Length: 213
Image 1 (cartoon, one colour):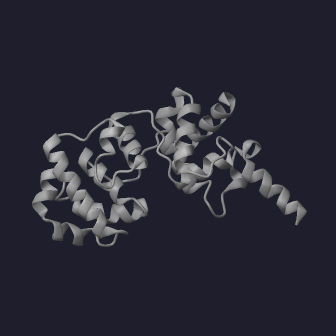
Image 2 (cartoon, helix red, strand yellow; image 1 turned 135 degrees about the vertical axis):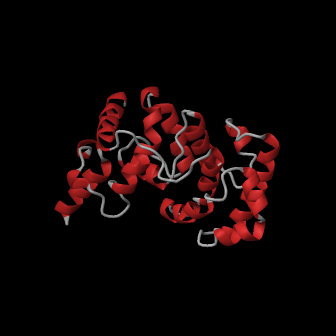
Image 3 (cartoon, helix red, strand yellow; image 1 turned 30 degrees about the horizontal axis):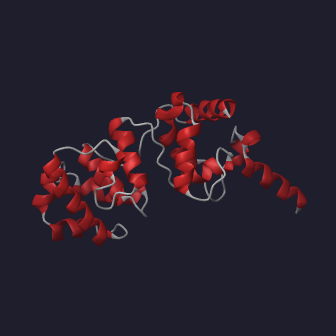
């Protein structure tokens, strides 16, 4: 397995030398808000919204001063905007008292609308914690490359955190997300140009299916 990871991450390093989140932000609070908004929404959708509102909102006090109705209207183009507006505002109130975004998963999970994926991503990006926050892209790529054999993203996250060597942990999350987003896509993946064909279950199955048909 270590050899497989070495091959995979050497290729991902070639594709993405310095991978980063594609969410736009300029402060820790802005990042948390962007991640909370990104649930059931694309980074592109979220960035269109945050590029405007983050001119006014840089910290918790800014959002609370803005008022609920105004904030809700400003994120109306994002899925579940009403619930997100409510929970983000509640989170801002809690963080105003704490003065700082928590670094521990247990504390992050106590914030409204913060699930395990959001908590791991925030801890990883803001505090360099060795977590792998698994979204649909990482879940798909990990199963295709047979790094895991799971149906649940949370189980994929748990297994990847155990199996990925520490030397790749800093690079892993964002590189796998970008690889799944732009190369190993759900539909029409760029298999013919991929250097991981020999270890990819999806490619092997697709190859033999073509011949059988």
